[in-house]
Image (cartoon, rainbow, N blue to C red; front, side, top):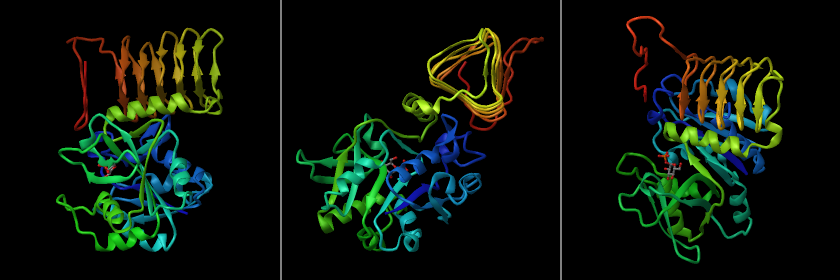
Length: 358
Ligand code: G1P
């Protein structure tokens, strides 16, 4: 089985975080989002993976290379302008050949990865396996309507009036039959070759598309709040081995719960950390500062006086204020400090499309 990991897409809803880089490289528990997809493909027994790149590809090839660090053989295919998920499959036609493949949208995170798909596929009666979970706002997703016996009644992409509350997860298992369908596919109203249209056409042609309802959590990281939630879910479910302490914790620091601390980091006397948290390398948490659960802090960051909870701080962030920061994402190299001179007030230097909630 081959793997297709999609990392195109502009990530416009994640601006300003995506002005500079690819959204799939944003950190969740201090690891790029895309790494989790690679882990899941590996766990599913895939060895050959093609990563589909869009126009913003910064950092992906540099950090993943030939995939050896992940136990995979990774190649790259440029989709150029994203023209739909089925178009990505078309771009990978030669790489995929006549093998079955797992397609994984790089902005999706699943608690149990692709294992349930493989189990269903092993029953031997499927031309494709798709996964679904109930959601509150199905109109933002592909929507599957299922009969009580599990038979698929309809599949639609972002319908205005959804026929069920079951969202299609961005992980799909296909046999090569899908290529014949995609070759005939017409662009949708929004001008894209939709994978949902291809799946529905395949089901009509073969009656062999199988939908499974997934247990465990699933996150499509389309918006900033999704990243914060994904960070929480991932920190809550990382294995104990992830929470290794390589840096230094002063005996007078108050540390409880699981914490991962990178080499060269220091938690000073009088600092308080309540896990699960991950702190990268060369991080300094100074006396009086507090880091609360579900927080990730990138390499080289310094936290002085502040309390930080349920947040993602990227690399080289300095926070030095006597206040509390919650539910936040702070980009690389940012500084939050206290203004001590007149005129008093908040002072900002913010990039485009920034959000400030005081
Ligand atoms: C894509 C698919 C959609 C699916 C979703 C899952 O949408 O088109 O069917 O439900 O991924 O993440 P996108 O998030 O790219 O708009």
